[in-house]
Length: 82
Image (cartoon, rainbow, N blue to C red):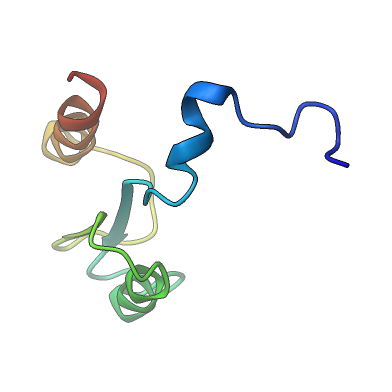
């Protein structure tokens, strides 16, 4: 049997095979997670619902500008407001 809490609610049971939207963000100058690794990550999902954003001039760091945050907010707003 299934482990407790691992069963999908009935309203979602038919949606098991739907792809999940994914946003991958990488910096063009990131030595830890280079943009080539981000491309491979995107390809590993085998889904058209994966968006890759490479921030020019960005290294391996947290979000540091309104422009970078805008990418995330636009991604979320298109998916959370329906």
